[in-house]
Image 1: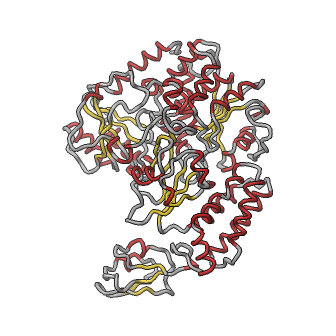
Image 2: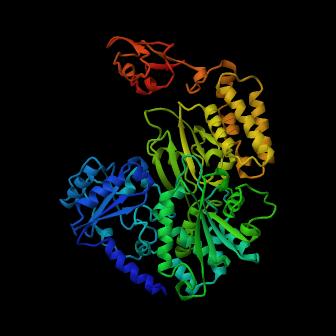
Image 3: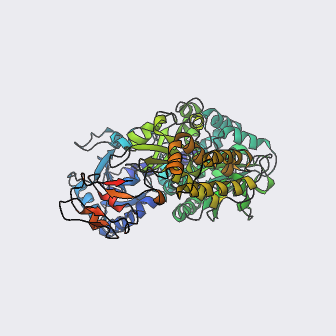
Length: 633
């Protein structure tokens, strides 16, 4: 079947909306994104599929990531007349128990997380959903009442964890491709450009350039215009783009189609890193499905508009996340950036006008076109509209993927959503923007998250990585770690980046080894300023951020390393040792049993001793002690 009109979409939408809420069977959706699979979801999926293979009353399906990665594997169970209930930490045995419990009226188990209030998606307002009127089960909270979800607003992640990413019909049932068909039949390219421009959407890949202005500028230049999706997500701990591609690939395809129509392009490319095999697999499936329905290719929906999308896999070079390096790699050349005195919207891929946005940016576009520019612009701050997806990781209780309105405070993300740092330890800093982002101390936690405010304190929005740090984090070592990463990922093309980062890393390594000297801090500041001013691309110009912000806000730690030859956090092994506080030690022997070197001795219920000659400073005893009897000296 080739889709020719909005009516064709509505027919599919009605059919699969009924299927999603079918009253005659129980639907079991298992989170099968990379995070879920890594936690054991595939075993639970296979067990449930095999157990109910011949049972027509139970349908086993897959979804993408619902965000709460700390609780994976997550399983959602529902039927036509009952709420959707989420089960956490599911194992193959538990998944069968959960289905049985649900069928029998839900005997509340400790792994029940909450229930979903339907409709979840911001785009299904017009669907008459019978579940929306069902009263909640007693003692089981709604998902949005759980702190992790309470303050989230999902636009880019609207379908992730809800639909089967390999089923285009379920995407259509959630109003997918309606925006595309509406503009093809009732709108002009200029109106689409104006809608995106008025929405205030800015690029979510790091630069934050206004998306509508970029599109309009590209459309002005003559030539074969190209649309490129940057899915080369290389920040340590960041997985926003991967989760969207694994959970809702069609939203990205539709966003690229709308961009192609708006600027007059017929060819799109998705540049995705080869380390994302599941994302690539689901993209390939999505493209084939869209082509089969006539939503990709020639004469889309019976119009003159044609658009094709190809996938190109990168080898994992961090620098290829930079637009000009990505385009060079896409052309088959070495992925090296070039100076941008000529912008890529004029001469980019194959020296032609090229529009490049990242995955999250494109995923927002169908929602904006469908709901209107004012709807999107009504969220966020004056200069940062809409929502932003962050991967919240590090020393935080609730790790996972969150989507929040721009302008929300760092405190709300770290403590209300993230739950604060575990083990009653003290929050120290949060880094935003990936390895090139700045480290923001606790005193700025009430700062609103938007492009300008983060820049004011020396950090960046970046693509959305957010790493929490506690009292046991050495800020000098953090700076050293990220500079080591950036040194390895620098393309080496320009001297300030190639040599400057290496010199900064050498100084930081020396400081962490107890060999720092007076003047090192000032030299780091001078080098950082030079690298920022004279590097060729964004990797170099932002690389000193971790160093400069840690010096700015945690200078005392640098001074302790250099002058006192001590690491206050007990991370740099050359600058500390562990001791047992005899007054605090209860003689429980937990530390002695866990010590890999047998360096701890002592009788039960008596203070223990630690042999410094045997101790390798691994920190296992420090983490294991419940009485704070292991001290860092």
